[in-house]
Length: 395
Length: 78
Image 1 (cartoon, rainbow over the protein chains, first blue to last red):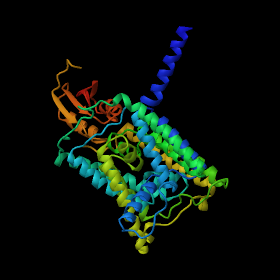
Image 2 (image 1 turned 180 degrees about the vertical axis):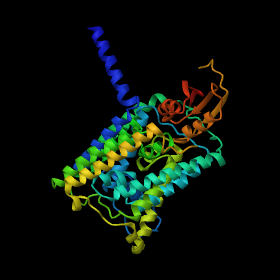
Image 3 (image 1 turned 30 degrees about the vertical axis):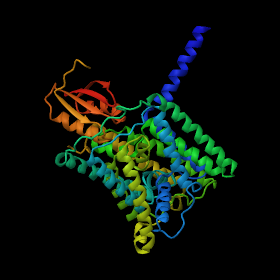
Image 4 (image 1 turned 90 degrees about the vertical axis):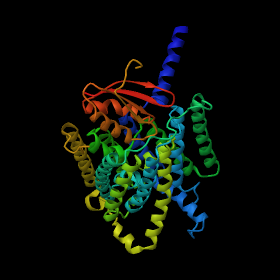
């Protein structure tokens, strides 16, 4: 009996480690992101990141008197709530795995965080969203603008990688002044998992609070955001890698996982829209054109400078990376300002593009088949590249 | 790992993805075959990227050691 008890506790410990401490495979992350993307849309809305950041930026500029119009409530607007949840879940997950630490980069990296975050802000404003809303959720929503951004992201990632090679030749950065974490002072490593659990329980409590006040939908969106944050950190799922790695190392795995994840998400969105359960217009933004292409390019270049996409910048900032925190602040402020400027100049806004909902032209079956065909071609192209290194940019 | 005397040390502490892997690739390209590089890093992502990353360019991860606040990776140029 005592032996079987010991075996049971050992299994429990191993299970805990596998789920909360050891890294999940990127495939697990991609599949779970795909499922959560559909769950989130079925519950209330597609997954997005920069929309929430913009609400916070809008509030800051409204508070200092730059904007006249009062932004929506940061506690009730679902853009804001889902991004808050992402940061919340990421922070909790990195504490649970004892990975959270303040990591101070060298000065050049901080400058790259500032510039890269600025580019993420401009690019996402032009493309109608970041890599999540403008690419992942847009393609899931059967919007052609997602592919325009994808083309821009690929080109931006290629040029961004060339820039990084050039930078390493001409500006070999100095090391960080305070490079190591946890040196001196109180060692709070043992407390991290407890704090992580406290944060997750607080998330459930806030969900209950939303429910008690009659905001059931918003409370559920918060939980969806927390789930996204946990999955991203545990699997270190990064869209920037899916665009960068085929050019940098030739590795295809992350890109192929994004393809798999998108297929799950596209199918779920198609069912929800075709069945009339969700609005066909949802996440079909008027960015098919220059906005998607140029915005994707600027965003792709920014991803290489910051080392993170929209979601990647957020979860790495919540993991304690100071460069990504700086990038996240710039991403927030510049996206808000760029959107405000676009709003003032309708002529510029008109250049951004048009709204193209693929089922309007191909029907739902045709739209899903076309998207799957493009995704399969992307999958095969990176597979071929992994074997041949033909697209790898030499250092 | 203590027994290994590296021929070169690369300090990537404080750097985040993709810089540690890029700097590592560049440092390895400057070494002779068989020489050992010690890389110090703080990015949690490096732990999983490094083995496959260096194998792809014909080098080998000999092992890693957790130090106070960072991890040392030992790599042999192939």
